[in-house]
Image (cartoon, rainbow, N blue to C red; front, side, top):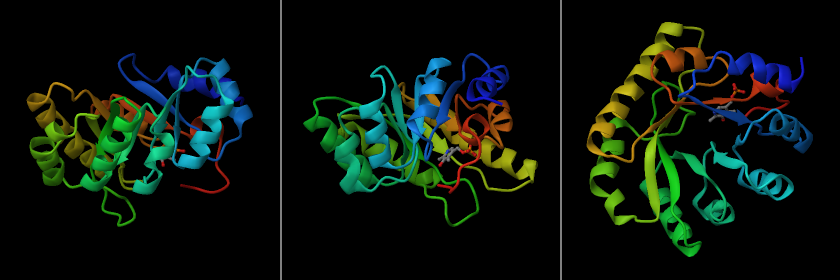
Length: 219
Ligand SMILES: *Cc1c(COP(=O)(O)O)cnc(C)c1O
């Protein structure tokens, strides 16, 4: 199956109100061009250098999503062009994004990453840390706009467990939405679990291997 065929199949399973992010990390420019030709304008990458290289090489109407863990000293490289940073997992990082956004004379949209899985490898804030940042910090950071939450479920075959993790993220999302008018994006769901995520209220899914095929190395 071609990338285009994969996209046609996947798009049939995604409702209109859900945005598809094509996760192209590790994939060559030619694969991204094929997805672009099939209509994709939102691409997700998890390494800043790789995203910058692809940004240089590809059309400028692409919206670039940083979905990986971000080191504060690298924010400056993507600050001029990144559309949405999904993995904000500390106040320190949020402040650095604010600083680099100001230097570039723009407001950068971000999602706070909330930890919902029980695996130690997954980064993120807990529910209370998210709420505290929203209530105490965001008003002092005018060059970042927190527009929602991102989370990754456990890597397991237990669908019930995945569903419950998504439910917990959705419940904090609903709480924040009721108190902050900028909150509108709930980024949850990957190739293996995006259908469950959509059933549980996702508005943005990040899909890689089901579009581009398996990666030679992960994350
Ligand atoms: C790699 C990655 C994805 C996509 O994973 P697939 O299983 O290939 O769809 C989604 N979200 C994040 C944060 C990732 O790192």
